[in-house]
Image (cartoon, rainbow, N blue to C red; front, side, top):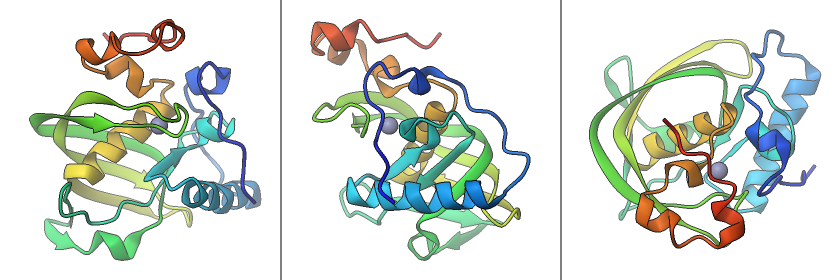
Length: 183
Ligand SMILES: [Zn+2]
């Protein structure tokens, strides 16, 4: 089922997600619906907050792009991440590392907008998959950026909070009022 995507000042977008202690049918159905909703909206990722559910859960569907490449390593070996998409991650813990890159980002909760956001190039992720198994991987590039963007959503942080100052100034006043700069 396609779900409605929460936008702008919807309170769910500012609500840190609860840990998922039990993966039951409602969580499995939510994952299916979030993947369907993400694909219909042509997004690279979607967090539970964006469908009104403040949970530590997000889905990703990041393709390999020539202009914005990604890489994944599992157990230190390069992995074919495209074959793992769509990826559902629960209760994710993320460490960031590597150089800081500033690149354009958008968000399905802020239609038509984009801004430059500085983020580290790489992430180390520990999470649960939908079947309760532990997933650990490292990622670089666009995939790492998508993980950081979605993890932020699950903590009530939005990309407008992290936009570089000059791009924040370009947002219309009603968007500027929603910004909560990340300390
Ligand atoms: Zn987003």
